Amino acid sequence: MSIFDLIFPTLMSLVLVFVVYFIVIKITNHQNKSGIITAIFALLFFNYGRIYSFVLRPPSITSSFWIIIGLISFILLTGGMIYFLRIKRFRFQKILGIIFTILLTFFLLIFNRFTIYINLIKPIQNTITHPYIFLIIFSTFFFLFFILIWRTHYPLNEINRGLNTFSVVLVIIIIIQILLGVILTNETYMEKEFPTLPFNVTKATQSTSSYPDVYYIILDGYAGEETLKKIHGFDNSYFLNSLNKKGFYIASNSRSNYLTTVLSLPSSLNMIYLDFLSENPGKESVDRTIPYLMMKQHSLGQNLQKLGYEYIHFASVWNPTGKNSYADVTYGLSQLGEFSYLFLWSTPLRFFLPSRDISTFLYTFDKIPSIAEQNNPTFLFAHITLPHPPYMFDKDGNELSHPPFEPKQWAEIEKYVDQLEYLNKMVIELIDEILINSDEEPIIIIQGDHGTEIVPGWTKNPNKDRIDERSFILNAYYFPSNNENRYGILYDNISPVNTFRIIFNEYFGQEYPLLSDNTYFSDHTTSSNNFAISLYDFILVYEHGKYVGPFLIKEEINNKTFDSNFSSILSPLPNMFVN
Image (cartoon, rainbow, N blue to C red; front, side, top):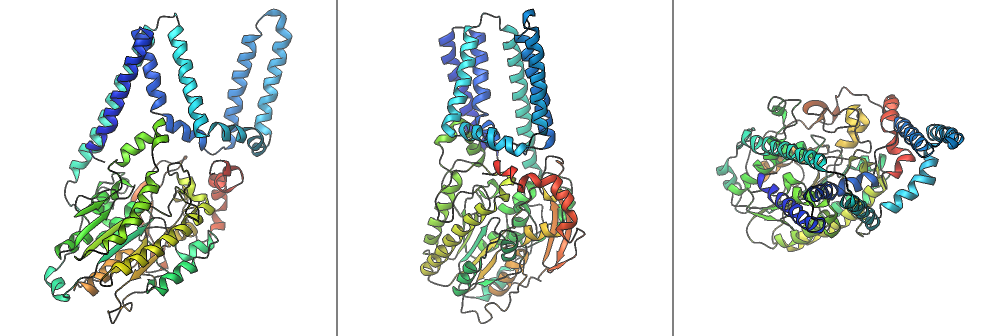
């Protein structure tokens, strides 16, 4: 994100607040009241999406949650009873009220929580989270505040002064965060500060008289065949067999080199491992500037550009791959940046927004086939954010309303499989169109960047089973059939870091040594009980397909940790939060 991405949200916020203030002061004719009403409007309007998402998908309910609810209920109900029954002749009713409150609290603490939810909370939640009903409720609250403040006769000077002070402090904090997070961070690594492979242009030009088009298509979160069978109960053989029939080589035992996109893509796009990040910026750093730069200034695109390739970048909805100033052409559906989109999504204006995820996905699959009709050699990079949640399609391609991504959505196995099945159909159609439209056979790489994680937060208690699930990926190759050694150079457990080392050696005259196909674990997630992150603290868990990691071999050994931390994700109760 750059400083320019903040201009639209900032201007919109200022204009809207001034307009509301102008309207309110015309109605109330009172400066203090207008200021307070405008502040309440801004607080509700700009946090609408967050509040809606919280009500739609509240935090997992644990026993401590119900204890707190019980204590709060006890205090509020008891206080209310005492207040409303404070007249002497109601002393008996006071006692009854206190007893009733104690019994209600006791009931909340010991009664079956699931039954309470199904019979009481769930119907209410389903009703109020209907988008239009929630908007009506939200608007009603604001108008009640409006009328209450408008009609009050109490002096509001102190309240208004406090709100003004709070607003100024809040603005200063936000400005400081922006300066530190955008300006200072970007100045730290303005140019390449990461190792790159040397590229011999002379050998590349001598290797062949014509260059094939190169398509590098990332399907985010596309798990390997074994994971889909074991974890998701899904047989993906129909799709894989379809790829085989079209001439693809499937590396059926392929694993990602890293377990998160922000590490996996910089590694594959630059054909190197990222060990140096442990020193700069450091194991415990949360600074992602270098990986982001590696995704924009990647060796793959720049080396091919030196050979006369046109680098075509398809914008994704994820900011680091949303645009690339180093590409010759960037195709994207909307110029509205990720930050601006999320800003609008957090307000009631979300109802007027098209699904950016759905629109971008459909646009990308519709546009890519036309690229194959171009005469000049082309390198195309597209980061498709499916089958990764949120779940936007059922298996027939029907569009689904969906909230923004939350890690707990990985646990919705059926929705993941449905979205994957639809994606499979789209990929097969896309390949057919590329091959039909191409004058010469291209190179096509269709690759997952990591697998799934049905237990969000598992990195706090890692084990081999979870690493297997997260590391197995789809890895499919299509090479031109005129190559005598078409797939003899590939092997079953090839990993993304070696993908383009092989291609550059075979088609562009380079002599890159192949690296050991390793998988590294690092803590890329946060959880409610541990917000520490060690993104660059790499631990080798697989070395050339063999497990060497220090973690537990069997999931059963770690069941106690699994149950205590994550049972709410997979038990019947949490389904109320992962619809």
